Length: 358
Image (cartoon, rainbow, N blue to C red):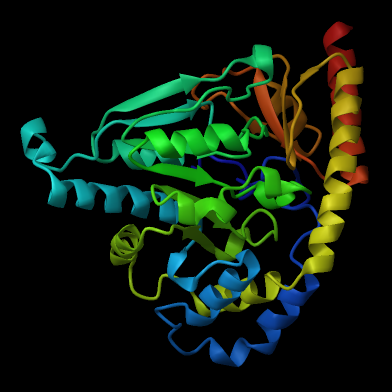
């Protein structure tokens, strides 16, 4: 069973899914058309170098193609980055042997708490030291100081809190850490992300890697496509060596290239997400819930334990945050959806709260 959102399988076909943080606008029409128009090419092996896809990504971000590594989703690349770091430390130092771990040693890594669990899961596969920076609800779970370690992961905006980290903090973490991985998979939901993204500064920070994915912004979760960006050519090559052959499928490549042309879709996303987010936040706060501010397409809120099960009785699936380090079973995450869907969630919460008081 998955520990993440989107576990709709085995449930009613009409379940209203608020647990998966994908764009409620759904797969862009241009992507659907491209997938259909190119269907006759799917019998061939994909380009192992992802040449056309890298060219499209390079143009989109205004960076060299040599900075780009493509993979089967950001989660896939998280594990490959950790493997690449392990290989570098094995080649460059005696640290693994001194540690006495015959499986290898990545070194100490720092993570936010709460944050996306795959950073820690990938690191712990190598039996390595994990350190945690616990975020506080008192300041809305904002990261307010740089992190410093051999390997640092910062999710920006953070999952499940939805909060952005100031660019100065990111840059300082990149200066002091041996390697900083900034997960920007939700950055495209931020209407004006230029003041937060590390992508324009990669040339100046060779110890930084930026993770991006098509999963959330373009609702392409089933196609599995992500990429990482880094100006350090040696590190890029090391990550590429961890990839399996043909790690990006032809349909994913076609969809990715088409998605990067969806400027109107992105404009509509930037218009509707903030608008619908405030509607959802205000609606739940009006019912007396503690709802934290968010900068992206999901919100974190609190209610009594067992809310996930109660909402399932209303045909609604939300994400329990009980398995996030630093949170407990009174924290929940919900994606920002359409106005009608948001109203359905708010109405269900109104009924649940009224029943609990009767």
